[in-house]
Image (cartoon, rainbow, N blue to C red; front, side, top):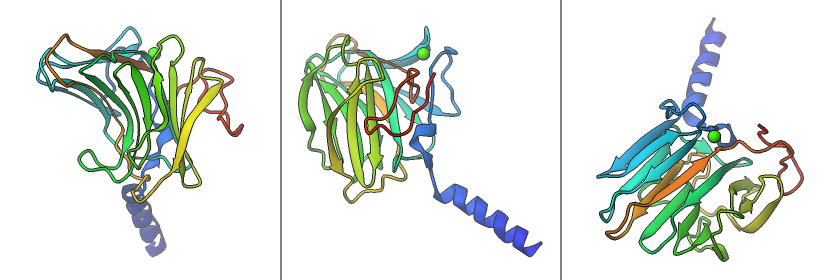
Length: 223
Ligand SMILES: [Ca+2]
């Protein structure tokens, strides 16, 4: 009985200490209702977060600093894991900034890995904060799937048109932060007054059949 008690205590403590692998956070947004077990949807001032027509749209208002935010309720572990998502469309004009990815702090991150869409381009931003792979002009017909993955202490950034064949933008060592307990925020913010802006995403960690990782290893989360 004592052993059972100790084992139970160990398991309970383990649940509190270790985050689930990031690849286990999945959503196809097909039930047109935000899954509040997985996600916290937040709007600031006149922004909005809407799951409809099988996808999720985050929007700003027309005032500066308005935003729409979808953030995972739990923390996740990216080590030897990954997150992929589909960007159906995103406003990238001046005054718009969309940030999709993971971070160990919402205030002052020591580990972060994010895609940022701004000024007509998108960037892969690794833990150092210095983009890898340069600026790529965003084209919604070409840049549909995005993925951040970690392997052996290195974080990689990939994009794909079909979710099957991937292009690696760049990579960087994880650095000093904690990649095992990460927030997963997706948000769009309007930096100055102007028309409302939006980003529409889908298929968090859901990829078409036939998709394999860039290094040819595991087949991941097929439809
Ligand atoms: Ca969907």
